[in-house]
Image (cartoon, rainbow, N blue to C red; front, top):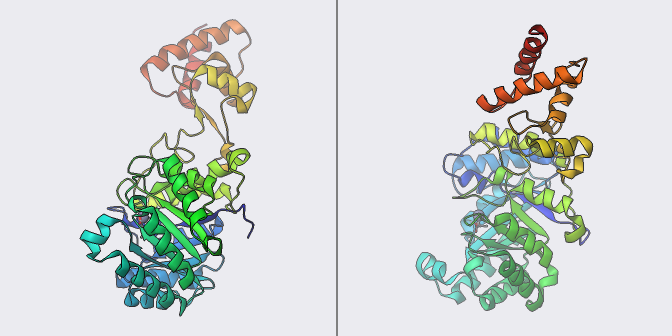
Length: 388
Ligand code: KIV
Ligand code: ZN
């Protein structure tokens, strides 16, 4: 793998499903996994095999059907979890066990009730145990965003020596700020002596709305795997959104100098599939996949886009799976967009004066209605022609 490639690790089926109300059936999960495979996502976290018999069956089912992406199961740093994950992953072409333990003072003291030394021992044991089943072991320092840097360096060095191939730095509670998170990744990569033996990954939550920004900042510092979900689904305010990360990487290659393998034309179909299965609708102004992401209503913008698309568009709608961009006719629209839509509908006025009358009627109607549809235009035009 080239050092400029970012591995896309999708956790829609695991962390995404932890979104209250987003649980999915085994069949629904397989449909989403197929869409992710078609999109050429590198790693699909199919579930948490130990969480329930249903989750175990889902991981196993996906491992049996998906052949082009690596299939991963989450496991706490406990033998029983790791063994259950290994069992569910048996049918996979390429399997990964993702084991984790919390590393922040607050989690170690109150949740785990363990000393830092005990946490390191358990992490090392878990990684070694997972390596008995698969070569591809990922280790996560849960709540790394609030963990002490020196402790992170110690536990990560030990986990890599024990055989972890991927080290994930989760900002579990979405506490990080981009420049600080970027510095954390840089420090880890510089200070851990065996850092070059593993791929560094990030997993950012969106509690402050910074999950994507933090992930990109980490990539700029050398992280080469990003964990994310379709539509940013996930615990609380969600995870970093796959579509935003992938399109930021593609659109700002000039700055980031990295790439992904993702077929971006599959983004919108997959977003719709996840939204229809979970019942979580996508807000209209959501970047990339929202209904308005490529829609223009303001006259100045419409005029600009009609003259040269890139005046107001930094991506092509078709590149993310929309049919085309969209000119929405409303009260902010101008005469050029109005005329262009009429031409698309096969309507042409004989004189500019007729067009001006119709445009005046359009503006009156637009003051009363949010959006003017093609049927409204047709009625308005025939009204103009017949009133002469
Ligand atoms: O947010 C988190 O810390 C997680 C880990 C289990 C990776 O989801
Ligand atoms: Zn998470």
